[in-house]
Amino acid sequence: MVVKIDRNLCTGCGQCVDTCPVEALSLDSDNIAIADADLCVDCGQCVDVCPVEALSLD
Ligand code: SF4
Ligand code: SF4
Image (tube, rainbow, N blue to C red; front, top):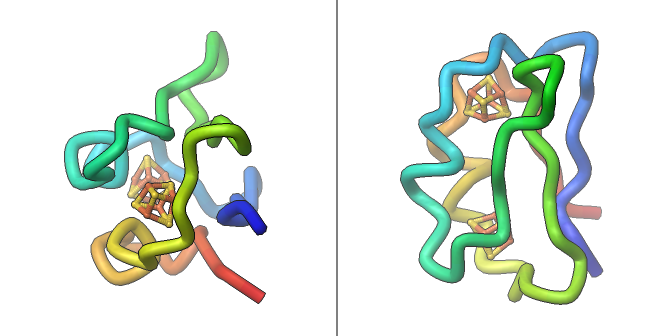
């Protein structure tokens, strides 16, 4: 499983990028968060830190 990102909600604030313990998140060329599925360990820390609830784990 990998964290899901709602591109319509993400403001590109970068807080999830700074929080992820395995550096699975980055900002793409549109300044929207993207996740590397090979790195994400489903810890949920980015979900908790996102101020606009753009991230989720099913
Ligand atoms: S914390 Fe939320 S709004 Fe900020 S870059 Fe990450 S997904 Fe986007
Ligand atoms: S769920 Fe955890 S490992 Fe996956 S992108 Fe978010 S902070 Fe990183």
